Amino acid sequence: MHKGILDAEIVQGLVDLEKDGSPGLIAELLELLQSSAPEAFDAIAAGIGRSDAPMVSSAAHSLKSSFANLGAKELSRVCMEIEQGARRGDLSSAAERLAELRAGFPAVEEALRDLTKSLSE
Image 1 (cartoon, rainbow, N blue to C red):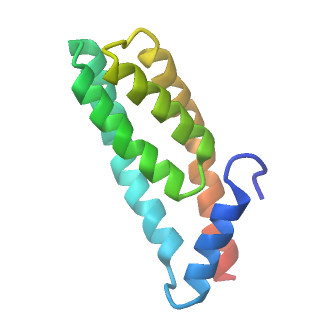
Image 2 (cartoon, rainbow, N blue to C red; image 1 turned 120 degrees about the vertical axis):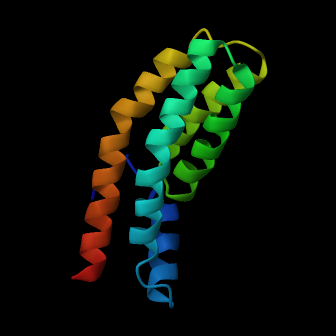
């Protein structure tokens, strides 16, 4: 499976939950992420455009948690960097970090789709 994209320990925890009575959990979480991440990306971009650090911080914070819960630690870390900078009022690297998020998101989606598919076989 997509080495380095998803944290193996977190993924195993999700797989265990799914097998222990929460069938479809990972697919449902992926669906939620697919609907919320683009909105959060747009909110971060809008906040950067308006120099609205609280908006950037809030959107990055919620996205950080979503990525962490699904094992996408690298994207969660990038969100944390955006959030911390925004909390300091520093948006100087936020656009670059946002580009990293947008570039990395498809690989996370693919890894989660593959995981969901492997569990349904």
